[in-house]
Picture 1 (cartoon, helix red, strand yellow):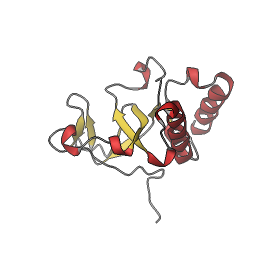
Picture 2 (cartoon, one colour):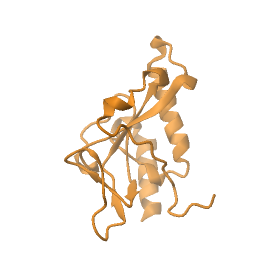
Picture 3 (tube, helix red, strand yellow):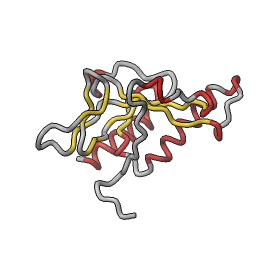
Picture 4 (cartoon, rainbow, N blue to C red):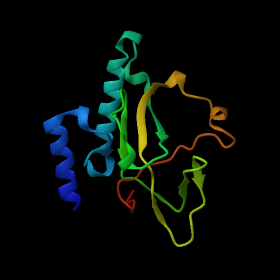
Length: 147
C-alpha cells in the first residue's frame, strides 16, 4: 500500500497543486529533506519584502492537537506533515508534551506536525517553551540506522 499511497499523494499534488494539499505524508517522499528545503525556500520567498535570506532561515515545528482527518485548511505559510512515529515514548495530546510510553507500545504515531521556517535570530528562547524547554529531535527515515 505504501507505493499506491505515494503515487496518490504525488499525483494529487501534481494535478491539483498545493491548494488542495492539507498535509503531506512525509515518509512517503524518497527525499523528505528536499521537500523541507523547498518549503523553507517557499517561506523565504513569501518574506522577500522583509529581506529574508535562505541562509538565515531554520525549520520550526509545532505538533498540532489533532490527526490528519481533522485538518481543515491548507496553511498560508509552511506545510502540515504526517506519518511520523515516536519510538519509546508518546505524545501527550492533553498536555502537549512528550511523555513516557505506555506499556507494550514501542512505536506510537505523532499527530499532524506544522512545519514552517523562521529566521534563526527570531528563534524562541528555551524558557518560552515551558518548564523543560523545546526538544530537538532527530528524524530517521528508516527504523535501523546504518551510520
